[in-house]
Image (cartoon, rainbow, N blue to C red; front, side):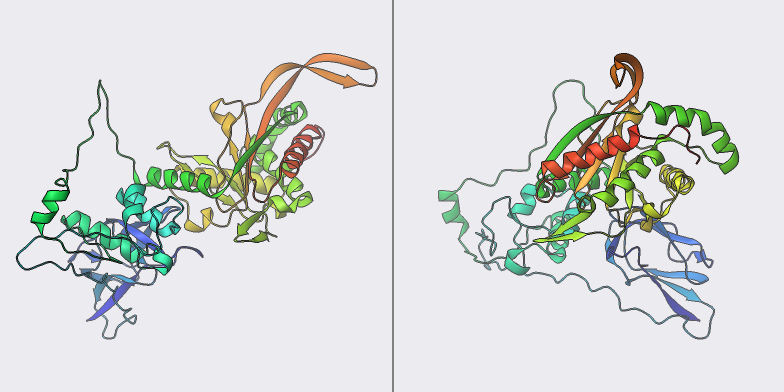
Length: 439
């Protein structure tokens, strides 16, 4: 008999930890090799963790909603092997318990001031801390009042996890820079008694729905993006009549020949990729004062889920794919997203994002940048409109298929001239689409 540790797997290059969502097995349950033991979640996607051995679940080391570092043992499986199949990884180190100093006979009140923090909203929080706070319902007001033990008073992962643990147990334990212990009799003379936590009430006929985990993460990402990047949005329109006519002409043959439907999305991505090659500064990110220009062109496409939430799978090396390859990637990732089959790597490494707001009938939108990218483009619904056509023989009015495009960009890096020029270039690519081309 041997004990084998089930290890939290590595879920992507930038993923350092994951949250336990659900245990499919409990201590005493039998498990087969590669059978799902639990479900986990990162800030990108949910995943299943299969068993790495066959045997009986001996012990579960973490509970639902626990945040577990990559490489940590999360369960132990008792096998029939004579020797251990895998060396045990060290168990996760529990958070250091902080001691609250109190007087033996008198209650105390603590005056706490975090080192290096003046209470302003400019305080830095790591994405990990913000994600944990969002998933546990910790408000920004609470974060602002929480002292940190990190560099310059920053709140660390240990600080936020300890705060959550203490809050759940009804304690109030904080790390302090200065502490005053005052007899309660003196406090009562100068300060009102602490008010009990009020319950928010709503007038009228309402239904209160708590955000699910993914919606909390989306909300956090959107707020953080607005706080990080000064957004500017430019608009233009394109006559996509040739593109629409070409798709109408080839779509049946395309599906029959390639086994998948061709939508407008891969055609939009094809044009975006061509323009990124002309304007590489659009395909970058900002690291402090350094502009990181990405040589890989990885296009994220915002995809709506059945739950109403949004996820952004990424087409890697989009510039290396022809139209058929782009179509297969678009359809495959969209299907995987809708069916909850995306892998963690499917949402990693995006350098530019496209969102098709026209799918839902919108003419245009002002999208929020998908950090750490510096630009995101929105395409609206294609509508027939009468427009003026300029020809050498003179102007005329014709019914054309028109579409609005908009692009939000980080004004720290992308100026209005570059943003507008790039957006116009994409529109011209779509307008110059050859209705006679082969796919």
